[in-house]
Amino acid sequence: MKAKDELGKDAIVTNVKQIKPGGLMRLFKKPTYEITAALDETPPKTELSRRESIKAMFKDNPDIILDDDGKDSKEEEKLTHAFSDSKKLEQKISNIAMLLEKQMGAAAKPDPEKKEEEKKDNAAEEKNNACLQLIYKQLLDNEVDEKYINQLITEIEPALKKDGSVENILSGIYQKIVLKLGKTEVMGVTQGKARFVFFIGPTGVGKTTTIAKLASKLKLDRKLNVALMTADTYRIAAVDQLKTYAEILNVPLKVVYTDTELKDAYEEMKNYDIVLIDTAGRSHRDKQQREDIEKLISAVPKEERDIFLVLSITTKYRDLIRITEAYSEIAEYRLIFTKLDETDTLGNIFNVKLLTGAPLSYATFGQKVPNDISRLDAQMIAKQLLGGSD
Image 1 (cartoon, helix red, strand yellow):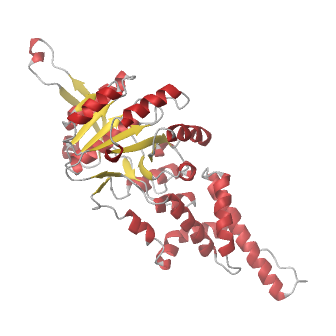
Image 2: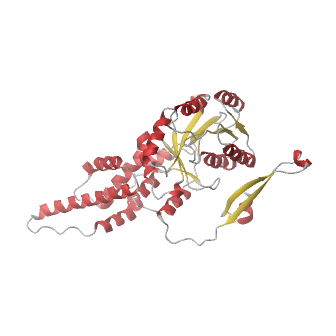
Image 3: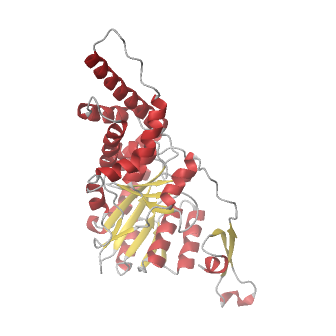
């Protein structure tokens, strides 16, 4: 906040370093922090790359991090009425339709031997098939699994009209994708009742940084009483990283080593609004490690906890299948996708959603705390998958 006050709202914090006092007086002085910040004065590009377009899309998404007693729970209403105004829907996807039409090119020349009515039917059918083939290719380029593409095409084909426009075909696919992605589910808070939020997932996906972003949003923007807890005692750096964030935000941090210690910590922290709990990045192949996480989660009553499985969108889909299957044995979870700034495609979001049935939640798209996090939006993802950009 001080960096932004001094340099402006576009200031970027690049490093935070803790400086401990030296000498005899170190016992009586608190550590200070050195913040390195910079301004990006690079002129904006007129055309965004596919990767930049994805990042820009989420960066501009309305910042809804928390469902507070239903106050911000407009996602279901938004999803239900997303297609009520066909004119607005056509406007939303018109740029994608124009791109498809350009790729389809001129219609095939009719056979002069065929009757006029038959020619029209064949031309309409060829147009529909050409459009579906291009949509198929676009989704495949975005790394949507072929099984799910075929599912979409099979579901939309019976409703296609022979004289249907490209916009109608595209809007049908668009609606199917949005409905399959479903309602986003984020953290909730109930007045006077603590919520314990676990973050699980493989090592290296960015769990600790994600927690720091959410803690900053909840503490600074929503003024909630936040506490942090970590069971990631395998990596000293992870504990130190979270400790630094806790000191900057002036929130408590509890380090636990066993499920018994977590039960004790649970009793201590019941007066907080939200407790964010970091866990060690475990191998999904290690049964013992999975059982350890399950014990930690079980230390908190089911009705008082949320669980988020944190995944990197850059992970291969076949590995994501194994990871999600392993964690599905632990508990029901919601999905957070990280590293969207490191990819050109969003197909894994759609794939994992359909594979697991788990609700989508947040996306992160950079290292900046707390800015580079957003609520996932089904309509935005559908638009990107079909080749649209803002």
